[in-house]
Amino acid sequence: MSVITAYLLGLATLPVGGVAVWLLYRLFRREAWLCPYCLAWTAHTKEKPDTALYLPAILTWASVLVHGRTARHRAWRRVHEEYDIRPADPTWGFEPKRLMRAVPTDELDDEGQTYLLEWGFGSERNSRKEPVEMPYADCLFDGKRVEGDVIRHEDGSMELLVVRHSKEDPRRIPLFDGNAEPNPHIRPIGKE
Image 1: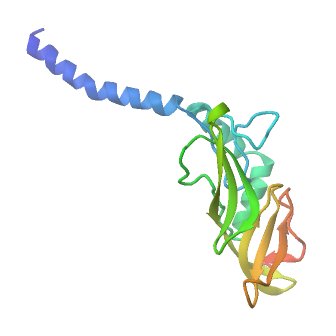
Image 2 (image 1 turned 30 degrees about the vertical axis):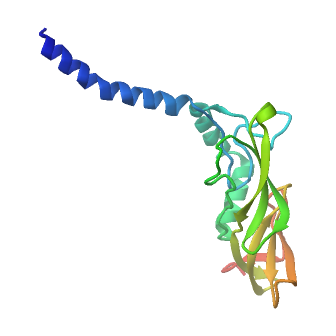
């Protein structure tokens, strides 16, 4: 083998080596994933189910597949699809990426609900409150059409915030309890 051939073969293996390093990074970097439907971490610590457990990405992806088959996830996904509610995702665009907890609070502003986000480990642990855009719902309440923003609570329950005449006089209608059981007075549009 000539020197030029060996040099060209060495150059040809550089992109393959780069792809292999990238693939190993993607498969084994540590990450966690919060389900936007049921607001549950797919991998969580046993003593605190609302706290994320960071695993290698390949295990996190496997836990996402397992989580998608749980009864709780299927119930919340069905609720969101039936009532045409877009799930609120507090982790979207959040920096730094090492988020450990995401807890909805009762603080509301014009278009968002405040979530308490915690990240980091040990002495580097930190938290801040971030507004998250509230999903919108349009449904029937005792046969009358109501629409408004959907508020999520820490226990998993959801309420519909109906603003009638003024923002100082909102009405809160319970939509679902923490187990995705709907309020019997609420029906999706088209299922009267």
